[in-house]
Every structure is written in C-alpha cells, then in structure tokens.
Image (tube, rainbow, N blue to C red; front, side, top):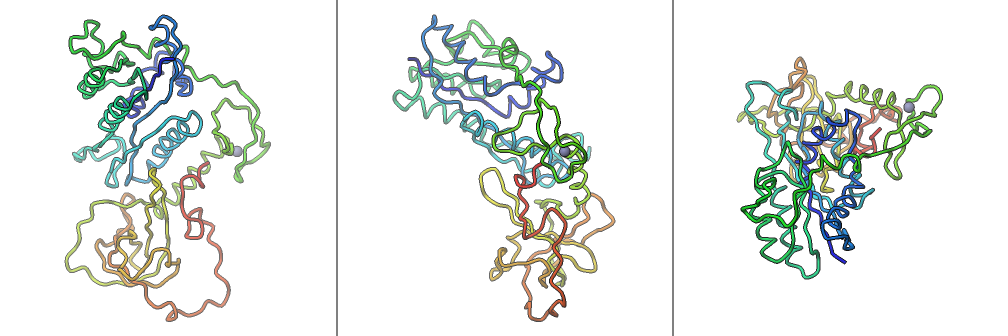
Amino acid sequence: MVKVMIFIDGSWLYANQHILSKRFGDNYRLDYGKLPQVLGEIIAENLGGMPVDVVRTCLFGSNAINYDIDDEQLVQNRRDFYDLLREEYHYEVEVFHVNYRGKRLKRSDRDPEDDFHPQEKCVDIALSTAMLYYAAIPNAYDIAVSVIGDRDFIPTLQHVRKIGKRVAVAGIKESCASEYADYKDPKRLKDFDIIWLGDLLDKLELKISKRRLECQSPLHIGSRFVYTDEFIRKGRRYYCHECKEKYRVQRLEQRDFIQPPMAEYSFEPDSPTSYGEIKKLLVRRLEDGSENKYGFIRNERGDYYFHSMDLMDDVDFEFLREGDPVMFDVAIQPNPGSRDKPNGKGVNVKLMDRREQPVPASPPVQSSAPVSSSQPFSPQSYQL
Ligand SMILES: [Zn+2]
C-alpha cells in the first residue's frame, strides 16, 4: 500500500476558490471532504491502479485578529470553515493570526490613503516544515501531494524529492507558478503531471439535497420547519437565513459596545486620571484557544476601551464585575460623535473599593444584551 500525505496551502486555496466556482456558477461549492479521496484516486491511476492510502491531510491557513467589528461575519465564516475541516473531515489544520490593527479586512473598505498591508506570517513555512518533517520520519508517507500555487515552495519540493519521496502538485491554472505547470520540469519538482483542480470540479462538487430542518432560533417567527440544502455541522443547531439576518442586525446595533481592540494607540503623555464604572466585560476566544479579554469603562465623557493588560498589577480581570467603580488614565479621549472610533482608551485601570458604592435597593436587572460578563462573548456560543 502506497502512503499519500496531502499538504494544502489553505490561504491560497480559500482565496482562489472563486476561480473554481466561476466555471460552475455561483452556487458551486467545493467538497473538502472528497478532496483527499479524489487526489488519492488520481495518484492511484498514475501508479497503474496500485492501492493508495491517504494517511493524512494537512491544511495551513490564517485568520484575522484585531479587526474592525464590521468584519466579524467574514472572520467567523473562516473560523467555521476551519472547524468544519477539523471536525467533519478530520483534516490536520494549522491556523496563524494576521493582525489587522483594528482595520477592515478588505482593502476596498479601508481608507484609500491608508497604506496598511496585512502580513500573513508562517503559513508557507509551516507547510514546508511539515512536508519535510514527515518526509524525514521513516514510513510516514511515500508520496506528498501539495495543493499549492505559490513559487515559494520550490525549494521544499526539491528537498522532499532528494530525501527519496515522490511529489505531486495539484493547482489551479489561473493561479499557478509557471514552474509547477511546466511539463519539462527543469527544476525537478514533481514525479507526476500537475493535477488541475479545475478538471476535477465534477467530482469535487458538494452535493446536498434539500431536506426539512427545524430552525432553533428564539427569534424565529412562523413555522420552524424549513427546506434547505445548507450544510449543517455535526452537533450544531440549525438557524434559518431570516434568523441569521435578524441576529446580524442586532449585533450591528450593539457595535459600539463590541468594537474590538485597536492595536495602535498613541499614548498621550500627560494623560489625565479619570473615574468611571465598568460597563462591559468581554472575552473573545481565538483560534489557538487563547482568550482576548477586554472591556469598556463608561463615564460622562463616553466609553473607554481597555485590555486586560491595561489593568494594574493587583487587579485580576476575572475579579471585575460590571458596575465596578474604577480609576484609570486616559490614553485617548472618547469621541461619541464618530461612528468609526466612538471609544476612547483607558490604561492603568485600578479597581476602587466596591464598599464605597451605595448598595442597590433591588437586585440588579439582568442585562438583555447578548454580550455581558455573565455570558462571556464567544463566537461559538453566539453563532447563529
Ligand atoms: Zn429561523
């Protein structure tokens, strides 16, 4: 049995998916579940029908952190995509962060004067390292199938072949380094003709027949049963299109509360000390399992964003509660008149004595907002 391992440049594939879809119309969806099997079959054909075992599929990708909250849905879609690959198809997925410094994801949505260029780090190197690492482990694989388009992988493919492993390249014609497509292969990169994903679209189409599902959203109006061909992940609730849209609008209305951290604050040196109370506490889970903890302080001038790292040493984020009186230094004054940056920035946040506050006469009313400290914000739990 010939062992095949597949290495996918996920950022490249995700960015070029529209090229594939274009040929089939906008409704075309690539079935990532079938991709390893289809590639395995092509290798088997090339080997004269020898049995092939696809032992692992590794995908390397990236996702935004520190982005403008208006792009939350785009980032969530990408998170869902990676989760789907892991949970549904058992891919090995490695995701790296791209810091957007509080800016919009698409260039067209950013200020034309802004020369910010997001830097994707590590994805190519991670793929190359994995391919070489497994090549060096005896019997891990015989053939590496790399799903790539970028020229940067040339030295990796050459060295994997020098170890004695066979290499195949699968690409997209419209987005492929000429060296991979060259059938004469002067750089000695591969042991098979290039595999064009565009030729496999029939086999790779995601086909889901319409079925009757029950919408689980509390926002749903009317009969909950909906006919849909949407893909629903294992163990997830189904929410219909209408409810998803309602939820999106609700979130936009609360955008001022959940404006994510801006990375670049210029600190005003003689920042005045100010007083306020904790208005919101938020915990956002990142792909790598780590948590981004931040919140907002409110006073008569507006809201101030603060990160858990802006707390004074003796203040623990977990110990904070909404309504707590705090003292802080103003790094940026809030500008409630600005839609883009309504919030200021507070640093050196210090908790004042709660006992100084008058005791409320009645128990505090539970906030109806979908994000609060008692319900830490997690994209998963609020996903509709
Ligand atoms: Zn619904």
